[in-house]
Image (cartoon, rainbow, N blue to C red):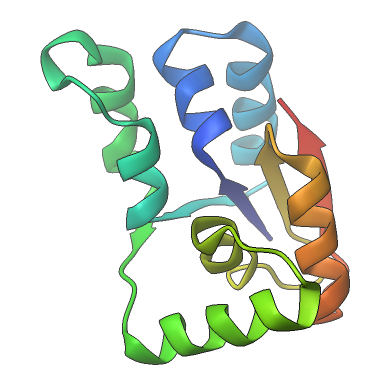
Length: 125
């Protein structure tokens, strides 16, 4: 199982949000792998000198690069879901059945998951 982190989860880490920390800790205890994509980090990263919490956490997160095939698949998923957020589409592509996505954008991710036919859980942060 993967615990997939969107920008809302990374911002929660940065702000030392106890709920986000608890969800991540529970996921890690259950053996979940922490995963995100590089564009999600770009959404959350603003000033490394002021984001010590996030900087310390990122080495524990498997950050997936985005290639041409990923970009094409994201575009196709956007068309299928009639949505437009490229970063959300890239993130949704990481999900497999049984995974959990920690997000502050549950509506768009639910739409993307439904269009992709993936039965992953969405946890609002």
